[in-house]
Length: 182
Image (cartoon, rainbow, N blue to C red; front, side, top):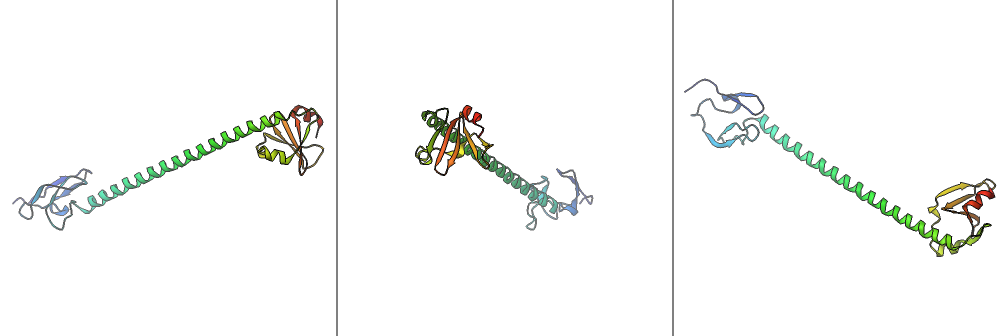
């Protein structure tokens, strides 16, 4: 038999020598199966019960490390897709809420215009605003009063609301209350 060792070039570019890597030096020590090859480097693997389809430990480790890497990449991609979907859902909720607020503000403006506020303003009971489902927190701007400390005028489009006492609000036109210097 031939005593020279057979060098086999693997897919990773490394050379393995015959008896060292598990590939036999001669065909009489063990037989090769034509169909059984290392899944990592495609080198023929001997039909030994102790050998589990890989030409050596490095190929086996590389194969399973690649599997783990692919699985980790799939999980990262899935997490990224989930994060993107959650962000899209959040943006849709914000859009819906914004549209609802805009609709509500338009409805409130219709109620304020229907009150036909005179230039001197109009006192309105807070209970009336509650009955028409008026949302005070949806004001456009909040202006600090110059004359009254810690009092504010809440602007709603062309109107301003000024709290007179606990249950009364003064509704005035925007152009008029700017002249009043409240």
